Image (cartoon, rainbow, N blue to C red; front, top):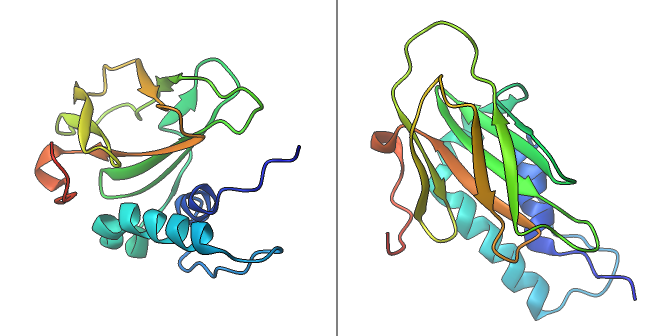
Length: 159
């Protein structure tokens, strides 16, 4: 059986890849679940409107250290949205990432926050951090914020 594409994941992939707008136009009949997934994706992205409007794809900061997952980063001025995804037949439960901050320059300690749960996944991330492990928690795609905690927008969820 072919798995129907997840609209939520498609919207997240498009925006973190650099799309400034998304149109819901599937090649199959749209139903209530599609609308629910579309609004769920927009709800995850809404607190990061400024980063999305003014940012750009970032290619060199994070990379998959092992496994079959992929990672995309989109950022502005030291703040990033990080999308980790695994669309294989058997998605992994967690993804190990290599951290590749550019050499030189002072940057504040950063936090990595799971946007969906508003849970801090890693704290005190600096230029010396070499790796991170991110949970997918049963999702094929999971959105994270990486940046200074002081700039983290209110996610409207229990922390």
